[in-house]
Image 1 (tube, rainbow, N blue to C red):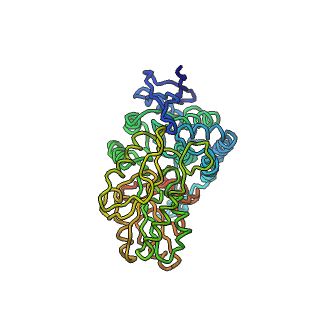
Image 2 (image 1 turned 30 degrees about the vertical axis):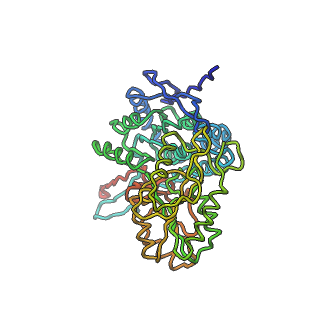
Image 3 (image 1 turned 90 degrees about the vertical axis):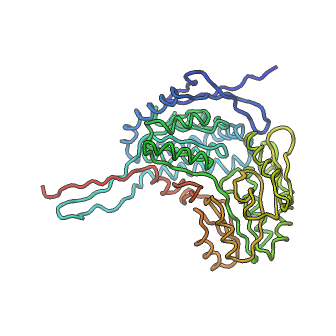
Amino acid sequence: MTTELRRLRNYINGEFRDAADGRTTEVINPATGEAYATAPLSGQADVDAAMKAAADAFPAWRDQTPAERQKALLKIADAFEERAEELIAAEVENTGKPIGLTRSEEIPPMVDQIRFFAGAARMLEGRAAGEYMEGLTSIIRREPIGVCAQVAPWNYPMMMGVWKFAPALAAGNTVVLKPSDTTPASTVLMAEIIGSIVPPGVFNVVTGDRDTGRLMVEHPTPAMASITGSVRAGMQVAESASKDLKRVHLELGGKAPVVVFEDTDIAKAVEDISMAGFFNAGQDCTAATRVLVHEAIHDEFVTALAKAAADTKTGQPDDEDVLYGPLNNANQLKQVSGFIERLPAHAKVEAGGQRVGEKGYFYAPTVVSGLKQDDEIIQNEVFGPVITVQSFTDEAQAVEYANGVDYALASSVWTKDHARAMRMSKVLDFGCVWINTHIPLVAEMPHGGFKKSGYGKDLSAYGFDDYTRIKHVMTSIEG
């Protein structure tokens, strides 16, 4: 007896719709490896319809006062709180994440971030008006960009969706948002909630695969393309968007160095770093997965970290004792496994290193030591519950190793020496430097990287600014 799959649908111009040509893809629950829903495999006609709806809705949404847009966003935040359990259920089905951690670690910051951007809508900053040429007054206008094509990833489908739509809508833009093809359920539910508050066409959701995303970015209507994803995907978006000079906002991969000096409290550092490395199965661009430890404490640190990994549990979403759930999909399980299978002879697996169970895409908490700077697993993003450990001799070598990758999103420094922490925060080439902590984010502070980690900022007033454009108005004051 087969179970009927739930049917997810696009949300375009205030209505739920199937793909115009009827095509669908199956959506898999990564905790079971079984299909639970179908979602539209959207094509050109669907993208055209969503873009037209967003373009038609833009003038009226743009012309609302900031206070009116703020009111709408605050209603969205309230509705997310009221329907939190539905959102959690959809996200858990999407991702296999632990229910309790999704409730405590995702819903509150999402709601807070929406409320932050609701306030940002009323704080349109610019240079003071003035007379910079005799007889003429200059004024700066900060305006919305227009239609925004946005592509969210599968590691945090709900939260990354919020990071995209909240600043865009607050600034007066309209949105066409595409979730990952593996995690559309919570985004479709968000569309239902948001669509009950904003006018038709202001917020649209189109589901589909990479080709759907390509059609969105290549479409002539959007003035901006925003993506959170892989470096390869970001490069493709930037290349495609360059053909008609769209603005591009890219939050891509990471390979965060975690630099641990010899004066660090080892027990406290291991506790915090293991949490920041294994949380969400390491499927986080800022995860603490590349640890650099001073040679004086290397062996003691590795022993403690391996024990922490052995004590960390992965499992089903309803198990209250687990820190993380499965990897998101079969391809990701294959990728993580491949990194371990290809380890060089000088590497040592101190803990984990294998799949857990035969059902779902679970992988054990893993620690690998004995690695060299040019090893594949050091240079490339694993995006799994795998923490690597390298040894360094002095501060200069720590900086060399930390900066010696293509990614530049986040980093952390662990030391009791304030001057050293300040020196390191200056020379580390990453968009964020945490000191004696790793991974906390707040709505008021920017998130974004350098180099192949992309450009543009999420969160904060800087993230809001990215969704606006600047216009100079000059007028004669001499009649």
